[in-house]
Image (cartoon, rainbow, N blue to C red; front, top):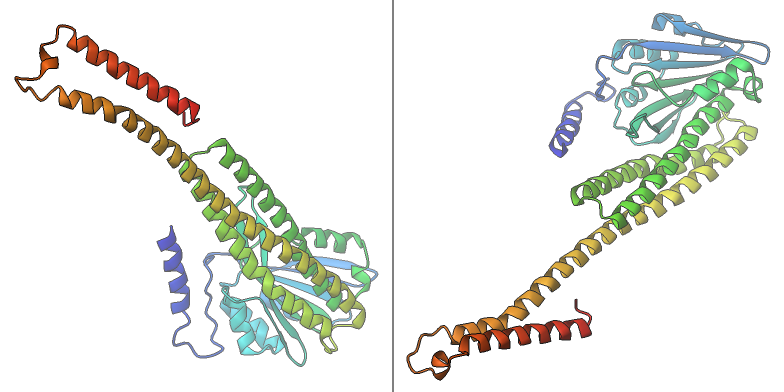
Length: 359
Protein backbone atom coordinates (compact mmCIF):
# COMPACT_ATOMS: atom_id res chain seq x y z
CA UNK A 1 0.00 0.00 0.00
CA UNK A 2 2.78 2.43 0.93
CA UNK A 3 4.64 1.63 -2.29
CA UNK A 4 1.53 2.35 -4.35
CA UNK A 5 1.03 5.72 -2.63
CA UNK A 6 4.68 6.61 -3.20
CA UNK A 7 4.41 5.60 -6.86
CA UNK A 8 1.32 7.79 -7.39
CA UNK A 9 3.00 10.72 -5.67
CA UNK A 10 6.13 10.31 -7.77
CA UNK A 11 4.08 10.12 -10.97
CA UNK A 12 2.26 13.34 -10.06
CA UNK A 13 5.54 15.18 -9.59
CA UNK A 14 6.97 13.75 -12.83
CA UNK A 15 4.04 15.21 -14.76
CA UNK A 16 5.24 18.70 -13.86
CA UNK A 17 8.92 18.22 -14.69
CA UNK A 18 10.08 20.15 -17.75
CA UNK A 19 6.72 21.88 -18.25
CA UNK A 20 6.46 25.51 -19.34
CA UNK A 21 5.27 27.74 -16.46
CA UNK A 22 1.53 28.14 -16.83
CA UNK A 23 1.09 24.86 -18.72
CA UNK A 24 -2.05 23.02 -17.63
CA UNK A 25 -1.29 19.50 -16.43
CA UNK A 26 -3.94 17.65 -14.44
CA UNK A 27 -2.23 15.81 -11.56
CA UNK A 28 -5.28 14.19 -9.99
CA UNK A 29 -6.50 10.60 -10.17
CA UNK A 30 -10.07 11.08 -11.45
CA UNK A 31 -9.20 11.08 -15.13
CA UNK A 32 -12.62 9.78 -16.23
CA UNK A 33 -14.74 12.30 -14.34
CA UNK A 34 -17.49 13.94 -16.37
CA UNK A 35 -17.61 17.68 -16.86
CA UNK A 36 -20.44 19.00 -14.72
CA UNK A 37 -21.24 22.71 -14.49
CA UNK A 38 -23.92 24.09 -12.22
CA UNK A 39 -24.81 27.69 -11.63
CA UNK A 40 -26.76 29.69 -9.09
CA UNK A 41 -27.61 33.16 -10.36
CA UNK A 42 -29.42 35.20 -7.75
CA UNK A 43 -30.23 38.50 -6.09
CA UNK A 44 -32.60 39.49 -3.29
CA UNK A 45 -35.74 38.79 -5.36
CA UNK A 46 -34.94 35.60 -7.31
CA UNK A 47 -32.61 32.61 -7.59
CA UNK A 48 -32.08 30.69 -10.81
CA UNK A 49 -30.41 27.28 -10.61
CA UNK A 50 -29.26 25.61 -13.81
CA UNK A 51 -27.10 22.75 -14.98
CA UNK A 52 -25.07 23.96 -17.94
CA UNK A 53 -24.27 21.74 -20.89
CA UNK A 54 -21.01 23.38 -21.97
CA UNK A 55 -18.42 25.89 -20.86
CA UNK A 56 -19.80 28.38 -23.41
CA UNK A 57 -23.00 28.64 -21.39
CA UNK A 58 -21.00 29.70 -18.34
CA UNK A 59 -19.35 32.64 -20.06
CA UNK A 60 -22.51 34.74 -20.38
CA UNK A 61 -22.86 35.16 -16.61
CA UNK A 62 -19.92 37.57 -16.41
CA UNK A 63 -20.85 41.20 -15.68
CA UNK A 64 -24.50 40.42 -14.94
CA UNK A 65 -26.67 42.44 -12.54
CA UNK A 66 -26.80 39.57 -10.08
CA UNK A 67 -24.43 37.41 -8.06
CA UNK A 68 -23.39 34.18 -9.74
CA UNK A 69 -21.89 30.99 -8.35
CA UNK A 70 -20.38 28.78 -11.04
CA UNK A 71 -19.37 25.33 -9.80
CA UNK A 72 -17.21 23.37 -12.26
CA UNK A 73 -16.60 19.67 -11.57
CA UNK A 74 -14.06 17.77 -13.65
CA UNK A 75 -10.52 19.15 -13.53
CA UNK A 76 -9.44 16.60 -16.11
CA UNK A 77 -11.25 18.66 -18.78
CA UNK A 78 -8.32 20.99 -19.30
CA UNK A 79 -9.53 22.56 -22.56
CA UNK A 80 -12.80 23.69 -20.97
CA UNK A 81 -11.00 25.22 -17.98
CA UNK A 82 -8.51 26.94 -20.27
CA UNK A 83 -11.33 28.37 -22.36
CA UNK A 84 -13.08 29.68 -19.26
CA UNK A 85 -9.81 31.21 -18.06
CA UNK A 86 -9.21 33.00 -21.35
CA UNK A 87 -12.68 34.55 -21.28
CA UNK A 88 -12.40 35.70 -17.66
CA UNK A 89 -8.76 36.77 -18.28
CA UNK A 90 -7.31 34.65 -15.47
CA UNK A 91 -3.54 34.43 -15.16
CA UNK A 92 -2.08 31.21 -16.66
CA UNK A 93 -0.48 30.36 -13.30
CA UNK A 94 -3.93 30.44 -11.70
CA UNK A 95 -5.23 27.89 -14.20
CA UNK A 96 -2.12 25.78 -13.62
CA UNK A 97 -2.77 25.77 -9.87
CA UNK A 98 -6.42 24.83 -10.38
CA UNK A 99 -5.60 21.56 -12.19
CA UNK A 100 -2.64 20.79 -9.90
CA UNK A 101 -4.46 18.93 -7.12
CA UNK A 102 -1.40 18.73 -4.85
CA UNK A 103 -1.43 22.47 -4.16
CA UNK A 104 -0.94 23.75 -0.64
CA UNK A 105 -3.88 25.91 0.58
CA UNK A 106 -3.09 29.50 -0.35
CA UNK A 107 -4.47 32.87 -1.48
CA UNK A 108 -3.30 35.08 -4.36
CA UNK A 109 -4.73 38.55 -4.96
CA UNK A 110 -4.93 40.01 -8.45
CA UNK A 111 -6.29 43.29 -9.70
CA UNK A 112 -9.79 42.12 -10.62
CA UNK A 113 -10.10 38.84 -8.77
CA UNK A 114 -8.80 36.82 -5.82
CA UNK A 115 -7.70 33.19 -6.11
CA UNK A 116 -7.86 30.72 -3.22
CA UNK A 117 -7.06 27.05 -2.77
CA UNK A 118 -8.66 25.17 0.14
CA UNK A 119 -8.80 21.48 1.06
CA UNK A 120 -12.32 20.10 1.46
CA UNK A 121 -12.52 17.10 3.78
CA UNK A 122 -15.24 14.74 4.97
CA UNK A 123 -15.77 11.14 6.02
CA UNK A 124 -17.68 8.95 3.59
CA UNK A 125 -20.16 6.22 4.58
CA UNK A 126 -17.27 3.83 5.32
CA UNK A 127 -15.64 6.41 7.63
CA UNK A 128 -12.77 6.82 5.17
CA UNK A 129 -11.32 10.33 5.12
CA UNK A 130 -11.88 12.00 1.75
CA UNK A 131 -9.71 15.00 0.87
CA UNK A 132 -10.32 17.07 -2.24
CA UNK A 133 -8.87 20.34 -3.44
CA UNK A 134 -11.33 23.15 -4.09
CA UNK A 135 -10.18 26.26 -5.94
CA UNK A 136 -12.09 29.54 -5.57
CA UNK A 137 -11.98 32.62 -7.77
CA UNK A 138 -13.75 35.66 -6.37
CA UNK A 139 -14.73 38.37 -8.82
CA UNK A 140 -16.83 41.49 -8.49
CA UNK A 141 -20.15 39.72 -8.95
CA UNK A 142 -19.23 36.05 -9.19
CA UNK A 143 -17.54 33.14 -7.42
CA UNK A 144 -16.10 30.24 -9.38
CA UNK A 145 -15.38 26.93 -7.68
CA UNK A 146 -13.39 24.10 -9.26
CA UNK A 147 -13.60 20.51 -8.01
CA UNK A 148 -12.27 17.18 -9.24
CA UNK A 149 -15.62 15.41 -9.33
CA UNK A 150 -19.19 15.65 -8.09
CA UNK A 151 -19.84 15.43 -4.38
CA UNK A 152 -19.06 18.17 -1.87
CA UNK A 153 -20.11 19.77 1.42
CA UNK A 154 -22.16 22.64 -0.04
CA UNK A 155 -25.64 21.08 -0.03
CA UNK A 156 -26.72 23.15 2.96
CA UNK A 157 -25.64 26.32 1.19
CA UNK A 158 -27.54 25.30 -1.95
CA UNK A 159 -30.72 24.90 0.10
CA UNK A 160 -30.27 28.34 1.64
CA UNK A 161 -29.94 29.84 -1.82
CA UNK A 162 -33.03 28.03 -3.11
CA UNK A 163 -35.21 28.96 -0.14
CA UNK A 164 -33.75 32.42 0.47
CA UNK A 165 -32.85 31.65 4.07
CA UNK A 166 -30.51 33.97 5.91
CA UNK A 167 -28.87 36.99 4.36
CA UNK A 168 -26.94 35.26 1.58
CA UNK A 169 -29.20 36.42 -1.29
CA UNK A 170 -29.07 40.01 -0.11
CA UNK A 171 -25.26 40.07 0.01
CA UNK A 172 -22.61 40.11 -2.68
CA UNK A 173 -20.08 37.63 -4.03
CA UNK A 174 -17.70 38.17 -1.10
CA UNK A 175 -20.37 36.88 1.31
CA UNK A 176 -20.91 33.88 -0.97
CA UNK A 177 -17.18 33.12 -0.73
CA UNK A 178 -17.44 33.36 3.06
CA UNK A 179 -20.42 30.97 3.09
CA UNK A 180 -18.55 28.42 0.93
CA UNK A 181 -15.43 28.48 3.11
CA UNK A 182 -17.56 28.40 6.25
CA UNK A 183 -19.24 25.20 4.97
CA UNK A 184 -15.83 23.58 4.54
CA UNK A 185 -14.70 24.66 8.03
CA UNK A 186 -17.97 23.40 9.56
CA UNK A 187 -17.23 19.94 8.15
CA UNK A 188 -13.83 20.07 9.84
CA UNK A 189 -15.80 19.99 13.09
CA UNK A 190 -17.58 16.84 11.94
CA UNK A 191 -14.19 15.32 11.07
CA UNK A 192 -12.64 16.00 14.46
CA UNK A 193 -15.78 14.70 16.20
CA UNK A 194 -15.51 11.43 14.27
CA UNK A 195 -11.79 11.29 14.97
CA UNK A 196 -12.42 11.84 18.68
CA UNK A 197 -14.83 8.89 18.68
CA UNK A 198 -12.24 6.74 16.92
CA UNK A 199 -9.61 7.62 19.51
CA UNK A 200 -11.96 6.77 22.39
CA UNK A 201 -12.87 3.43 20.79
CA UNK A 202 -9.20 2.66 20.28
CA UNK A 203 -8.47 3.39 23.94
CA UNK A 204 -11.21 0.95 24.94
CA UNK A 205 -9.80 -1.67 22.55
CA UNK A 206 -6.36 -1.24 24.11
CA UNK A 207 -7.70 -1.97 27.57
CA UNK A 208 -9.78 -4.87 26.25
CA UNK A 209 -6.69 -6.45 24.68
CA UNK A 210 -7.64 -6.28 20.99
CA UNK A 211 -5.41 -8.19 18.58
CA UNK A 212 -2.06 -6.47 18.11
CA UNK A 213 -2.14 -6.18 14.31
CA UNK A 214 -5.56 -4.47 14.44
CA UNK A 215 -4.34 -1.95 17.00
CA UNK A 216 -1.22 -1.02 15.06
CA UNK A 217 -3.14 -0.66 11.79
CA UNK A 218 -5.74 1.59 13.39
CA UNK A 219 -3.12 3.77 15.08
CA UNK A 220 -1.19 4.16 11.83
CA UNK A 221 -4.41 5.07 9.99
CA UNK A 222 -5.24 7.70 12.60
CA UNK A 223 -1.72 9.14 12.40
CA UNK A 224 -1.99 9.49 8.62
CA UNK A 225 -5.43 11.09 8.90
CA UNK A 226 -4.38 13.58 11.57
CA UNK A 227 -1.35 14.65 9.52
CA UNK A 228 -3.51 15.06 6.40
CA UNK A 229 -6.02 17.19 8.32
CA UNK A 230 -3.24 19.23 9.90
CA UNK A 231 -1.67 19.99 6.50
CA UNK A 232 -5.06 21.15 5.24
CA UNK A 233 -6.09 23.30 8.22
CA UNK A 234 -2.89 25.04 9.32
CA UNK A 235 -2.39 27.08 6.10
CA UNK A 236 -6.06 28.10 6.27
CA UNK A 237 -5.26 30.33 9.23
CA UNK A 238 -2.95 32.40 7.07
CA UNK A 239 -5.56 32.58 4.29
CA UNK A 240 -8.35 33.84 6.57
CA UNK A 241 -5.98 36.22 8.31
CA UNK A 242 -5.02 37.80 4.97
CA UNK A 243 -8.67 38.16 3.99
CA UNK A 244 -9.38 39.90 7.30
CA UNK A 245 -6.61 42.42 6.66
CA UNK A 246 -6.98 42.83 2.91
CA UNK A 247 -7.74 46.19 1.34
CA UNK A 248 -9.16 44.59 -1.79
CA UNK A 249 -12.28 46.23 -3.19
CA UNK A 250 -13.77 42.76 -3.71
CA UNK A 251 -14.27 42.14 0.03
CA UNK A 252 -16.29 44.59 2.05
CA UNK A 253 -15.45 45.43 5.65
CA UNK A 254 -18.79 43.99 6.82
CA UNK A 255 -17.92 40.61 5.29
CA UNK A 256 -14.45 40.71 6.86
CA UNK A 257 -16.15 40.45 10.24
CA UNK A 258 -17.72 37.17 9.17
CA UNK A 259 -14.31 35.91 8.10
CA UNK A 260 -13.10 36.82 11.57
CA UNK A 261 -15.63 34.32 12.94
CA UNK A 262 -14.32 31.67 10.52
CA UNK A 263 -10.80 32.42 11.76
CA UNK A 264 -11.91 31.70 15.34
CA UNK A 265 -13.37 28.38 14.18
CA UNK A 266 -10.16 27.47 12.38
CA UNK A 267 -8.13 28.22 15.52
CA UNK A 268 -10.50 26.02 17.53
CA UNK A 269 -10.17 23.15 15.09
CA UNK A 270 -6.39 23.59 14.98
CA UNK A 271 -6.09 23.38 18.76
CA UNK A 272 -8.31 20.29 18.85
CA UNK A 273 -6.22 18.65 16.12
CA UNK A 274 -3.06 19.29 18.16
CA UNK A 275 -4.71 17.71 21.21
CA UNK A 276 -5.79 14.67 19.20
CA UNK A 277 -2.33 14.39 17.73
CA UNK A 278 -0.85 14.16 21.22
CA UNK A 279 -3.54 11.65 22.20
CA UNK A 280 -2.69 9.44 19.22
CA UNK A 281 0.99 9.49 20.16
CA UNK A 282 -0.13 8.68 23.69
CA UNK A 283 -2.08 5.70 22.32
CA UNK A 284 1.08 4.44 20.67
CA UNK A 285 2.98 4.79 23.96
CA UNK A 286 0.13 3.07 25.80
CA UNK A 287 0.17 0.26 23.25
CA UNK A 288 3.93 -0.20 23.58
CA UNK A 289 3.59 -0.17 27.38
CA UNK A 290 0.86 -2.81 27.19
CA UNK A 291 3.02 -4.99 24.96
CA UNK A 292 5.95 -4.53 27.33
CA UNK A 293 3.82 -5.44 30.35
CA UNK A 294 2.57 -8.59 28.63
CA UNK A 295 6.14 -9.52 27.76
CA UNK A 296 7.21 -8.93 31.36
CA UNK A 297 4.42 -11.21 32.58
CA UNK A 298 5.52 -13.94 30.20
CA UNK A 299 9.18 -13.51 31.20
CA UNK A 300 8.24 -13.61 34.89
CA UNK A 301 6.41 -16.93 34.49
CA UNK A 302 9.28 -18.42 32.46
CA UNK A 303 11.84 -17.17 35.01
CA UNK A 304 9.89 -18.72 37.89
CA UNK A 305 9.64 -22.04 36.05
CA UNK A 306 13.37 -21.96 35.30
CA UNK A 307 14.16 -21.06 38.93
CA UNK A 308 12.08 -23.98 40.19
CA UNK A 309 13.79 -26.49 37.94
CA UNK A 310 17.38 -25.31 38.57
CA UNK A 311 17.78 -27.05 42.01
CA UNK A 312 15.74 -30.03 40.83
CA UNK A 313 18.00 -30.38 37.80
CA UNK A 314 21.03 -30.05 40.08
CA UNK A 315 19.87 -32.97 42.25
CA UNK A 316 18.94 -35.06 39.24
CA UNK A 317 22.33 -34.30 37.66
CA UNK A 318 24.30 -35.42 40.74
CA UNK A 319 22.51 -38.72 41.08
CA UNK A 320 22.64 -39.37 37.38
CA UNK A 321 26.46 -39.51 37.23
CA UNK A 322 26.55 -43.35 37.64
CA UNK A 323 29.65 -43.51 39.88
CA UNK A 324 30.12 -46.90 41.58
CA UNK A 325 31.03 -45.55 45.00
CA UNK A 326 28.09 -43.24 45.72
CA UNK A 327 26.56 -44.35 49.04
CA UNK A 328 23.11 -42.95 48.25
CA UNK A 329 22.82 -45.07 45.11
CA UNK A 330 22.76 -48.27 47.14
CA UNK A 331 20.42 -46.94 49.84
CA UNK A 332 17.18 -48.93 49.92
CA UNK A 333 14.91 -45.84 50.06
CA UNK A 334 17.23 -43.52 48.08
CA UNK A 335 14.85 -43.09 45.17
CA UNK A 336 11.93 -42.18 47.43
CA UNK A 337 14.16 -39.87 49.46
CA UNK A 338 15.28 -37.91 46.39
CA UNK A 339 11.68 -37.48 45.25
CA UNK A 340 10.69 -36.33 48.72
CA UNK A 341 13.49 -33.75 48.83
CA UNK A 342 12.62 -32.48 45.35
CA UNK A 343 8.91 -32.15 46.20
CA UNK A 344 9.71 -30.34 49.46
CA UNK A 345 12.01 -27.93 47.59
CA UNK A 346 9.31 -27.33 44.97
CA UNK A 347 6.65 -26.64 47.59
CA UNK A 348 9.01 -24.40 49.56
CA UNK A 349 9.87 -22.29 46.51
CA UNK A 350 6.20 -21.95 45.49
CA UNK A 351 5.34 -20.86 49.02
CA UNK A 352 8.18 -18.33 48.97
CA UNK A 353 7.08 -16.95 45.57
CA UNK A 354 3.52 -16.59 46.84
CA UNK A 355 4.72 -14.71 49.92
CA UNK A 356 6.66 -12.34 47.66
CA UNK A 357 3.59 -11.98 45.38
CA UNK A 358 5.53 -13.10 42.37
CA UNK A 359 2.78 -15.55 41.54
